[in-house]
Length: 174
Length: 255
Image (cartoon, rainbow over all chains, first blue to last red):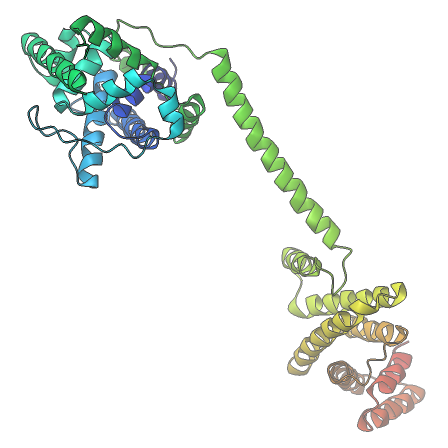
């Protein structure tokens, strides 16, 4: 790789689908998902190039994937904060989240099953959502998720189990 | 109601992998992000510290469709730019042949002003050139028999003549060439069939300014007896308000 642009281009190609999917499952529409994903990569690129412009930086980006996921998590939280609503409050009290942004086209693309899971995932705790998405959709090993969340692998495994159980209950209820 | 099992749930979760961003959006976003900064060379030392993100999966290579799609978008942009360029050139090209009263005439005026600004013409020379152009427009309109355009052409001449007269009165012009040019323009105007503007106040003002300037200039010059007589005659005509005739007499002296 001869320059930062080429490096980031590869990172972009590797993560665009994953980050978009991660965001899309947490928000209400394709438009919002695209908007947030754009912000994530713009911010990611800024940080990525800045680490080379200031070589003495204290925390160079060791894992671009983890870095992008972290930006995406924060961006989603910011999005809901700006909107003045919280998508998930607790595992016990899960408010119904309106889904006004879904177009007919989106509905056609997503099958009924996918829609049900998507809606149910949104009702989970944020950490449970993240772990389920990373592990089952992105095939991320438990150890990598642990590093990402700064938690021991055992804790992640327990959270994954609880999240899955809760999700199963939500889907069976619906 | 059929209860979903954990295995079925995991299977269904994996179907969510079908969710993908729109290809064109992803390509556009990538080009926008990377266009923000030109290539920055990375030193070998820094390169060594770059880890391969999530080594379990190899980076997705850019497919042929991605490249084609990218080229298509660039071409679309280039075509749009070319079309706009052709339209602009076409409008300006077409506007050159317009006359007052035509739809594109304002474009011609803008072009003339831009040309004058680019060539660094003085305000007076620019006004003379514009007046000349408007008189030629009137001559063309009269020749083509486009009666609808004549009032607009005359109005344009009046405006320019008034501006030029004011300029001549406020600044004494010592450049005989410029005055001669104005005089020739006025003669051309007088020769346009069916449009006698000598009685028009703005044009009359311009005649007066030119004659006044010429008389002042000739009074300072050494003249032969014959020329002195012609000048006296021109002064008489000027006093009588016959500025067009006075200008004719002055032009004879200058010959």
